Amino acid sequence: MSKPTDSVPALRRAVRVLDMVKESARPPLAADIARQLDLPRSTVHGLLAVMVELGLLEKNATQGYRLGTRLLDWVGGVTEKRDLVTEFYQALDGFSDLDSFTVTLTLLEGMEVVYVACRNSATVLGASFRVGMRLPAIFTATGNAMLAEMDDTTFREWLTLHPASTWPNPLTPNGIRSVTTLVREIAEIRERGYAVDDEQVHDGLWCFGAGVKDYSGRMVAGVGVSLPQTDLARYDVAELGGRAVALAQAVSTRLGYRNMGTDSLGGMR
Image 1 (tube, one colour):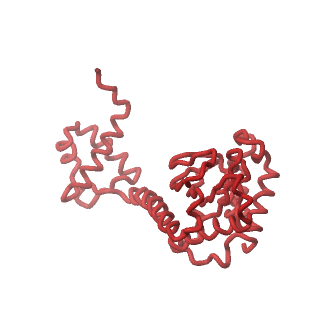
Image 2 (cartoon, rainbow, N blue to C red):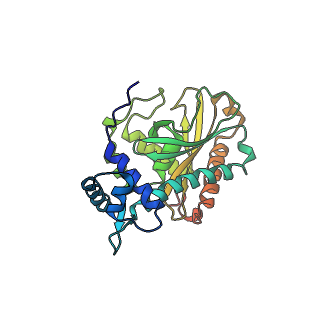
Image 3 (cartoon, helix red, strand yellow):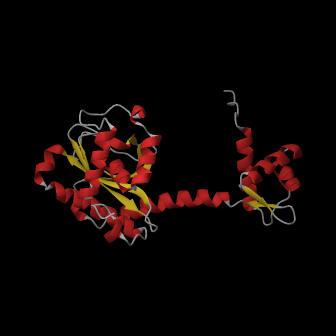
């Protein structure tokens, strides 16, 4: 079998350079990099110049290269997501009253929510959740909870970036179809303190969602508590919403957030 053609050799070379710089005892010179990686000097000089320009590498006083500060931004983003998932699961361990529910953690990415953590219940929901799954934010409880956590200016900016003409078709007959309906839904979420997916993602599936904030008060995620519509009559709806809020607050607290009594949902903005 022939070897696949490498369509992005420059990217592979850049990664090799970063690995070498990281492992070097002292900042290597361009000549050192060319020799150790067995690359043409002209290629290495061009690559290093671009990597310095992009902040991936920095030059020191002796013309050696060290890792750039831009990499710290990337590391921080990855660490933040890993910490968020860890804190979610640790907080969830303290909520035995959620053992019979499917509980999820999502991030808002543009028009979608992406599922980054999930604990499925033994109850058949009619829909399965998995890490990495994406759904339109406007149909999900976690997505609408995160939209409701935005201030009015940020929410209007989100609507401008994602006009109704770009929205996907509803997944069920209950799905939100207009800006007017979404704005009304956001107002109701802010008033009661939690979001409700009343069979918008899947027929027969309900979900209650609330937003998670980090130490700075920035909304970073949403938690969802899901159950079959057939089990809904066993609970008070407000109580289920309260369970989602309590979990979201617990995760927020673990992330260092301390101002939930003054600027959380529920008309307290």
